[in-house]
Length: 558
DNA sequence: CTTAGGG
DNA sequence: CCCTAAG
Image (cartoon, rainbow, N blue to C red):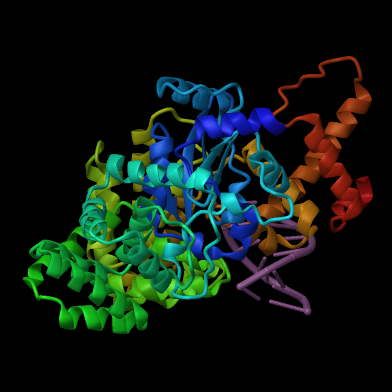
């Protein structure tokens, strides 16, 4: 794997960030904002529908064998499990004039960094990337600290070799991004920061991120800082004020001084300082910025966004949540965000908004929009849902797209919108009827509810990859630890509950037994009975069944 | 809430 | 997949 993969990596992902997994594990600061993540990743895989949902980001992938499926991940841990169809990738890269060298059968996504190559494990990754074994892969660790809370993240040193590339990568990311609102903001910041010397930038950098950097590259620093600042809406605005002012030397210096002074304080002081000292500008600019941020973020729900952060146990998550709260001062959104369990989170949000009747109506209206528009179903669904408040409902949308084998995205989206519409509206209706209109008999309510549920949860076929994940989960956590498995491997699939996992495992056991008997019976006959799952899977199931004898059923057979 | 187990 | 009982 050594040199060949390395070469491939260097060549193919020259404009892509590299990141060591060890760092990812320790430092959750990579949990950046969703729009960043999605936008960035989307660039590399434009042909994949990409979205974030339920606290995760997912890709809709197409595989000639599997059809459409959602590959998703919720944290660095899961990144390793993202598989992409090699052919599709090769094709894409070929279109981009890239040589894949046959190594792109696997795409690994880590911390906004897409690696092409055949990397499977952390160690393999490090090894492939040629990191010094004694070191924590210093030249792989690049940036991303800017999104974290102040102070507690150490920025590692960077090899000059990668700095340049990284810088270009980030900048190209910016320029080619489809989302222009934040990008233009960054550009403006860049202009300001451009006026600063490398030394200044270093200083500012260390102030912002609480760690020194050995990087002297102005571009790199500039961008890092700009992105870091961008995360603080207020500050960015302030910076914009600076930038928009006269560009005399004096002003530039003043800006630097102010910036430095400001950055030496706490985050809030920072904002205050800048706000107080900077030349004030029309406030509507700020509002417009916020408004446009809102519309931008409608691509990815803020709920998801923060949920993403909260998936992992981390201080930075809290920090990010706090940070987001300033942008999204919605109690509903932030209420359950500190929950690590995404399921809890989900439910809490649900419960919260259920209490607000207005929001229910809101949802209802949104969903009607979904139903009406075909081409724009998905879009309107997501956008509308964010106008009033952070309603959780749309989170399910992209998830449900996943396991379908239909070929048409729009149809999928539309169907899902409809599905949601039905379920939500019914729930809504239930509530209204049961609480407000007490005359309706309980029977009616019950039947209605039942009917709603029936329509809501149509059968979802388990994909082979899901089965494999389940097996992996069982082998890791053991039988009966369904919630653990759910959290670990199915956190992104909101439609697979722990109960579902349990049921599926039960079915797998049955199936494996059947498979075994069939095999014993006819050794020479139809060996290929439309195996959805390969023999190895059944072997694994049996092994695990032996290890963790499942209640009763497995005891009798195995 | 989570799990086991029956339907 | 749903439901329920038991912890």
